[in-house]
Length: 590
Ligand code: DGT
Ligand code: CA
Ligand code: CA
Ligand code: ZN
Image (cartoon, rainbow, N blue to C red; front, top):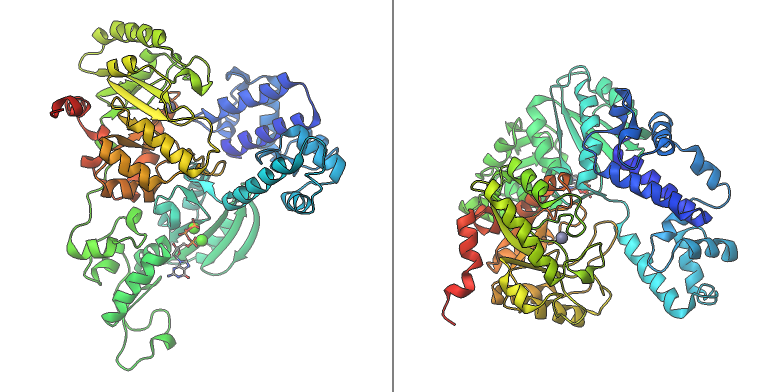
């Protein structure tokens, strides 16, 4: 079991206990343990295998440790089986809906016999939910909205979760006899933010059936949905489906190109091929014989032009190799033909961290510790951007706190050599678009981030006006996580991003791609739009701990999908260039 599955099961146990009405302290203990697990860099299974004592971890007591061991060994939790003899496990899903807490979920079950989302939808439709004490019409229609939202999100996993699943699975596949190479294709290779299923390719000249047999015997497999002579399909215990295809060397590049997709990109490449009398499929690129009916050809019929590498596939179309992140049929084929493909930003281009938290607000570490971690990762500068009080997290900074924080920064600076700290703040955008800090303090800060943390259910016009008003404050430098979405958990709030981006361009405000794999906000499409408008984009980890700084690569992937080069990235600038950008307003005539 992967860490995130263990975390998910313990989180589920916490919710089940809440529905049961258990002691809130016990519930909290599980949630704290989940936080610890989410912050681990090693797998719990490997720690147990190495005989390590899990209770040495923060917030992991004997009880939690034994649960983890049970999960790793059996994949199940007896405690959950016990609770779910009282009421159905599905109630956990109901609690994910806005407007349904643990108590209400329990009542929906006890009083209406509702256990599933489908049943709840029916009970809303026929008025039974509105009729329940303490629910009412408003709450019923809110529930209906969040059912729709939930439906649009289920079935896909985060890119970061896919990484966790893949690591041991790929190791397993590489152990199979005859496997020369293993690659992941599909949306994962295109670096998409969420993944529907995993598409894996293995290269082997012979023994494909045995390799597929080895694949379906992977311990994480829940059920096998297909096992043929070149393809195997399984569903893992984590719920994700995986396809494996085994190909010989001569076809590997063709298969990689085909199964990387996107489907839309492939449709375009295939049409270009047909115009040249070429047939592209997962086995190679072939010249269509004169007078042949292309439909009636065998899979490898015709003169083979290439297929061993992806480069050969594109070269057959007189195109250079195209980065998978761009393969969405958004103009990449035309750009390839014209030689105008962008040079995409890389992790190595990033020189500063512009958005991070310390113990002054809800971060886990001191400024000194966070700065040290940034330096260790090769950054040249960092902005400290703690929250303001309206966010409601522990310790939002008041104007007095801000000044006190600067003293701490000033004391630290002489120890840092060339490394530079910028005095920043993540200022909450209040309900009406005013900012949660005085203009005097904002004017004194080096770097002002604004973002929405509350009143997310405003209508689109109100929300759009609110955010635009905020970024029009002349002290503001950057808009953070602009749509508020949490992938798989929360839809973007209603906001007209086109209007917001136009306003940001007008006001000279930069926009963030938040690198947290659950946010990745801006989306690729919005980031593409920001790029068109010439808005500087920041790749921000929004780190609350050292480990969060590793989120950078997810944001870089998102930026690559948005065609971004280093010169469009705010924190790819040197500290000096960044400082010059911060002075952009004083530099121009009033
Ligand atoms: P996902 O799994 O929803 O995150 O997205 P993908 O892009 O991984 O889609 P998937 O798994 O259905 O297929 C993987 C790739 O295989 C897809 O990007 C392109 C290729 N492919 C699959 N089915 C077709 C098809 O019917 N026609 C063409 N041209 N390509 C296909
Ligand atoms: Ca896929
Ligand atoms: Ca697939
Ligand atoms: Zn933040």
